[in-house]
Length: 218
Image (cartoon, rainbow, N blue to C red; front, side, top):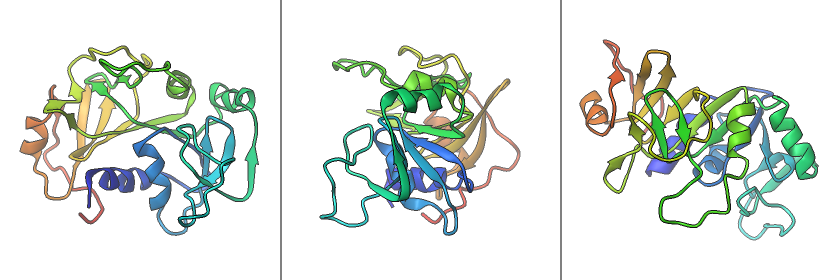
């Protein structure tokens, strides 16, 4: 199983029935593929749809149906489409139960930086700031390290997306829960030791006496 699939499968276990869930661009969009059987979730995309789903099969793409990143999506029966004003009214109004976002850095206080890519021109922060501020629960789905450097850091060196503490961080190595005392190591990925997580992390973690493995197969 590749790293992105592992992360998406673990995030999917956090979703509950009848929740309104926003999936950010990139890795988070994979979460929709791995919902546990029987879980009924309404996926929202900030460009204006509730009820999106993965394209059922190759060849059924529709140019008028895409997520916020422009990738093709499907739509469940009864899906609703609307303009950006309504979409961001939902987000800013606190109606989203969960948002799942990618990340460039998360610091030991649980603050996220995810919109400015060093050395690259970006069009702006998009809806990330609204999503982190407006959603009831914020889950960050990202790889633990990039180019040999940890993305879990003592202090973010990139511009913050929000001063709000996120609720959960799922990486290819671990599940971390930001708390007032710091980042709590809740789970390790299958086959990954606590020592490996600590070695790959750029700040101190709170480590319980027992740390279970993620409840998914490798």
